[in-house]
Length: 221
Image (cartoon, rainbow, N blue to C red; front, side, top):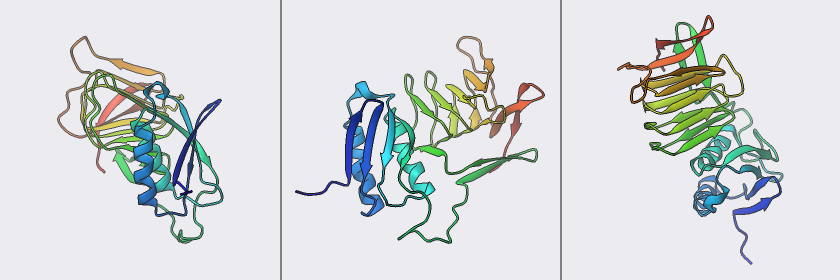
């Protein structure tokens, strides 16, 4: 019997995915992508735990896995097993944040709790994650992105974005073109009239809460 790198099982609380971290990560990741895409659409929105046994996983590998799940509409809730360095993982390698955004002296970091979505999001699609979300593409009208942390869109944000969804008033939403139909940070909501956008900036901008209201500023990476 051939051992599989990826085994997916249903549980009472959602989905459990067992990964063979002894194999090459990229090889295992390809199999994970194939199997996640084959998951029945009725399970979209389910919570997923990843079991890596006694092996080790880095922060960047965790973020990649979470991104694969998010693209199928699955909610990544945690890793069962070890994290950090170990055999095959250089112990002196402290992984840095994936990127940083600076605006008026304030710094927003996208690190181990970051999911990266490498495509455009179209109307009807929704991505949720308890940490940060980076979208390498556009968020079109009718699409939604909901993050417990910050949101960065390396494209045009025309849909709905909700950062700090669990009440984090220090969260932010940034985009190369910030034109959302609705923007939320924690419990602060900014809406646009029907058929219009909240903002019309043509430069990279970041939205965050200042003095109890949502303000917009330019940012740099």
